[in-house]
Image (tube, rainbow, N blue to C red):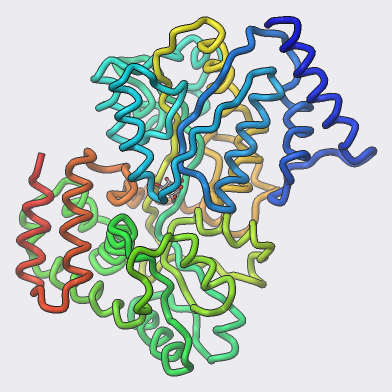
Length: 445
Ligand code: GAL
């Protein structure tokens, strides 16, 4: 580390440290301000001289809750003396971010790390652009700290090329309890109850379901319906294995008709809406429910809404015993300087640390991916998620999200998003026609 950088880090930490509340330990809180986060990071990560570099991280965590979570990462890197170059590309679901990343990599100007997940990790590694972080992983015994299904996804030919951040559960229903109490709607546990609650809300003049009409959200809703209506085995066969019979059979027809039955309970301004704006409608009481992954919880918390009071989390209808997962991870790119490579390794190490796993996930709405973490600071939604994750793994009900990059390659994912979205948005398309398009998408390369 250059002496000036070491001094800068010292000063940044000193300044922040002097602002930290005296006599009160800096506990992880979902409501940390940026200054508090840096003070926290100085305490957790400030020690240890090293080579200071620049760390540029591509992500799409730009909404309220997501930005707070990303801030925790920035603070931990700054506390280690590295300079942080934020490469945030707005556009939920990451569709725009990945397009920008491709052009940066093609022009030989890759960031240190990028939010890449699922099968795409292997596709990027195949291009020869990712770097091994095996030395960090070996020294810190990641193989023992991660579930095997996760560690395997983070490796390419036996070497870690990515670090996992969290576990999100997709199949959640978010409810505004004040609206429910006012209208007499009951929190649904199956699809019949869902439509009964939706009807009650609609009659009371409330938007029943806040939806964002973007293709990744249309597919996120679709996979949740597919799980609820068809069950875990159907989900696995039809959406993950893309088995022709399952994709075109009677269960698929039932999934499609249930999916389409939801549409009249969304509002006419849904097309194009970001998911966090849909969450905001539930927070404000303009809408009664949202079906969305638990990154939505980060929005409730960032808005000061408390679990059980401002919002209720319930498993999406008929999915209480299953878990559609998204595991966010950072892929590491080959870099040109030793200082930046050192900073990249510090990033990998920080992400896997228990301190970071706790503070990040408290803000993000997800649960730690590192095993053996204490959950006492987490709310009931996160505790339920952690329990279900373990239980679902034992009963073959732990399923990768198709809509959020965990199950299929990205060309297939895009084709499925298009096909399902066209069906959602059409007034005329029959189930038979939708099935034809979904099968074609599932079989695309
Ligand atoms: C997912 C990602 C989540 C969340 C969400 C909305 O793809 O895995 O972490 O960011 O998009 O932006």
